[in-house]
Image (cartoon, rainbow, N blue to C red; front, side, top):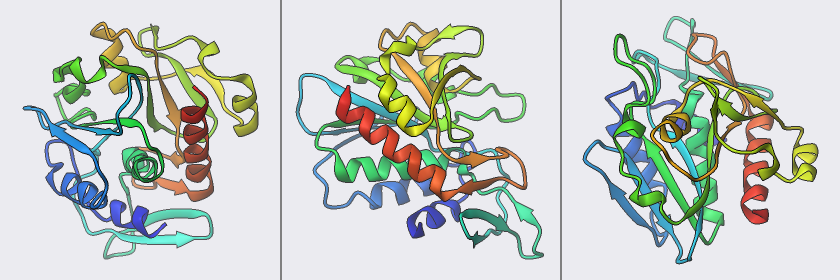
Length: 240
C-alpha cells in the first residue's frame, strides 16, 4: 500500500507526466528490462525473451489539476484531502493500473508493458492521444493486451465505446471469471479502444481495478478490490 500512496502523491495531469514516469521507472531499478520511449512520450517495456508475450497497459496521466494531496487510509478505503481538509482526487485512474504493472514486472518472467501518455480528455483536446500516435511494431509479437483502466472491481470490458469489439468473451476461462467475480460487459473509451479503431489485430480488454468516482473530488480506491484485480490479471497471464 505504501507504494500506491506514493503514486497518488504525484500529480500527472495530461501533458505533465514526466514526474510519474521518472518515479515509476525508478521502482524497476535492478530488473533486467528493455525500456523504450517513443517520440510522443509513451513508454514500452519488455521483460524476458519469448516468441510471443502477454501485454498489459495503463496510462500515466490523470485529469486532476495539481493541488496538495494528503493521502488518507480509512480501513480498506484510500482517498485524499487538501490542506483545508477538503476531498481531492487521487488519480487512481490510472495509477491503480501503474501499481498493478509494477507488481507484474517484479513477478513475471516474460511480459510486455505499454504505458501511454495523454489518455484523458483535456479541455477541447480529445483523449487517447498517446495510443493514437504510437507505432504498432511493439505489439507485433504480443498475444493479447490487458488494460487495467476500468472503474469498479467486477467488470471486464470486451466491447468499447462505439461498439468496438475488443475481444471475444471466450478469451477468458470461465473458471477465472467465476473465481474473481468478473463479467464481460460493454464499456467506454480508453487506449485499447483507440488501438482497435486503428486496426490492431490482437485481442484486448479493459479490467476493473478498484477505483471509484473517477475524475471527481471524492475519488477513492478500495485496496482489497485493487488486490483482487492484480490477482486476476496475474492468473490470466499464467493461463493464457
